Image (tube, rainbow, N blue to C red; front, top):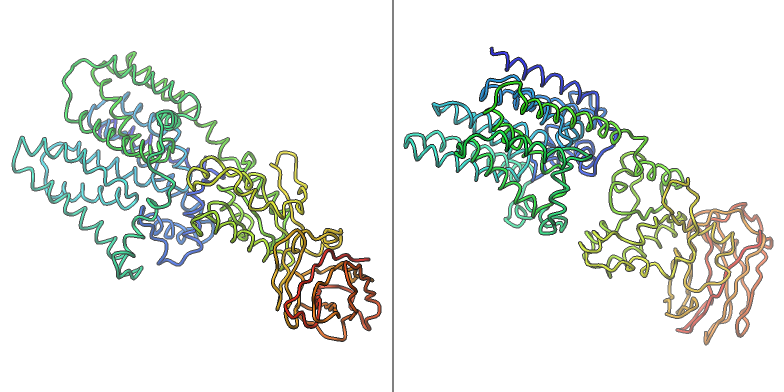
Length: 622
């Protein structure tokens, strides 16, 4: 075996070790989504239409690891695939140019690039997809003849790339360029190309059909279409990219700091090494690959570096190609080597810093909010990582975001109604509501995506916002507000003046009416049941109310220490007086009074007969 191949193997092993030693502890939204898929879904539901093979691979890796830490099991798979990809890229350079300097530069440039490195230490589909893309380059660059075995090998590489990410169907265009050139030169060559395309298509389509029909049980075209196109219909991607986003994405793919600067130098060195104006088919088809993928991702989401991982080995090999015109270990290759080392060194610091959970602000926020809340509390959170951090790290799954509301209800009017209903339900259960300030002002991205105004969320909650108080949190945590449980609100006098119905009350045979006060229309045997209170039993309860045009003028208050268990023995009746009156009810008159108050039930009249009652306040005397 040539020395350059041993260098490729050694380089792959070194990068594998580096990746395994720098596994990130700070996960992206997609990474946590994949982990949830593997750990919390039945096996029939882990097949994602856009990266069909990744879920099963993650499940198998987790099973091999003993079924414990799925995140690290899947990260180790990516680290090994990343190291193998680096070795394979080095082997391509070794076979093509038979030069140690270019072999080393190709591995350093690929393995040390920020995007490739970061996602080799993260849970991400593109690292495995890129491994197979490098395999496609290896097969295409294999010297003739094009045999059936070669065709099946290329078909296998294409199948892997497609099954690990659906966007690699774009690879058909650069491959047609190569195939067209070879077929034009030699007509018999069409057969292995046909076999390669047929085998890849059969394997991929067979896998999809098995999942759709055999596993998922789809029987209609609408079911298939909804499953296959689910990402495309989310509204997140497509047609929003700018030239600035494109430059940012490419720059960050190279390095987290000054990536564009390093890339421009590399391009300059490559251009200076060009000795001929004639382009080989190698350079042409790699350039077509870059343009096709680049054009699509510019439209799709140009600033997302994970999408550029798949073209990183293509760009590296294309930039190195002119260096083959220079002498080994001379100025051009030494500059390229120095640049690669500088980029890798810079990225090591950036990746270890980003991967340190202690520096993850979103993790800190999620931990602080989880510590300051109870499992039954409703958390209204900004869109983003907290949607997965809370359930993954803190097992807190009761939360809402604008994204979740709009995805479910489609319009903000319906979302606002659902939001208030959820808050009301939370209060009814005796739990608190915690709202992040960022929830009240959705990001520009969310406003644009869903077509909502910047103050839409605040306007939705305006009637109850005065009842929220600041949530005590560490100084480095963005501000949050808290709507205390119903019992705590009652204890601190929040119900003394009711400008609207207290949240969480259940009305029976009564209908709330619009107005500044809590006015209800009462029918026969109306009842108003409070939320869960769970407070020490007070000595007195003070009710301020105004009965208007009711057939009956007697009210009754029930107290209980068991949810929804009301009886006459623990109640007080009193006669209503005309106008606004303040009724002081002495609970000590109730025999065997329990020590804790769980719920109240107020029957404002025995028979309202369609009349109206306005309840202006409820207060307790400890």
